Length: 529
Image (cartoon, rainbow, N blue to C red; front, side, top):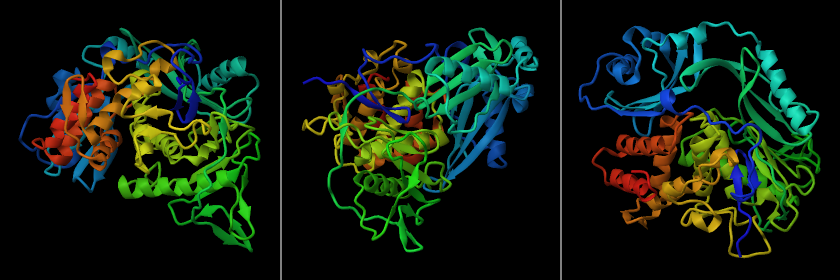
């Protein structure tokens, strides 16, 4: 029986099929054509530049100025180091860079550069706007904006209010940041801002507002909503950490990072709600037990498997609210915390009852703090896929998503399949990708492509006449996570992800490793040559 396809999307569980999905607001593409196309440069010079790792990075960039279209004179003003991380497991150093023009960042103009343990630059990945002899770019950045950041915030709020009604309290304090936005052959100043509220309905909408005329240049949803049907949890017994204070037990785990806190929303929309308590430490709220225990499981997975201290790698507290709204058939990461509805017992049981769901949503937090893949078109599909891959790997018990909470009255089905994405109306080959404007450009539909590549890499198999030798789930996860954490940029597309994954494999296991062949073939098998 073919059913409506449910998909974890943008931090929220979305129930939909390709034909039923409608993106909110203008269906504009983020700029990835022409001047802001992601590039991949593999270093071929065997010489190791002298100096610090930062000096090696600049030496490499000077050597690539012709490919990047940035003169040596402009280089120091155009590209800045945003972040530097050392990976103790591989000995690699990873730099995140950002392009600026006249001190203003270029929207989508971020890059990653990588040094191996010998100090040699191995690769560059990211998008750069050429600046050589580009007077239009400099002129756009030199123009003082007519509008303020507060104006942009108000424009976004007005649009959201017109669409859904009077807005409730923001979940994240509104702010707006100025960017230079490449658009075709021209440029404009824009403010990036978002509306993040729970009332009159949960929404998290990203906006780019023209800094001079106030028009909305780009708008897309980072949380999506749907109506559906759902149910209550599996009845298994779990052990977990709580906190005793004043003779009362609190559903607080103080042993992990900044803590794990679990609240009840009491079927209302206010967050975070009420911190859960118990008199004898024998907890009967099944949704709360699972949310709390699975959050701890995911934290431990991040820490022990990925070497990561919570979503931000700095011990960020994990806050979850169960019983959010009445019969709410969604779960999500809203950029601050987790929310879980109870479902209504038909299509879903309580959504905290599946580690896939918890792992997927908290992985959106990891993505937010690493590559920050834009939630639109191919970068958005990668965002969804990496959340699936990490979330499903927490328990690693099968190759499907969400089977413990989806349609509890129907056995044998799931939300998505890694081994056969087409079972749930997802493509398993790049040639069959969705290219329309719905679903933010197919962010959850097309995630099946890289999900299948990950499955083939881990398990092995043959597709489209390409045979892949499996390397095991742990090694495959290590490669995909390192690609996300250190190599990808905000505008990375499928080709960029393929190149980055192959390079990450070379950097971790060596260029002659058979794993490189397996990764290359896994992407070939899904149509990424």
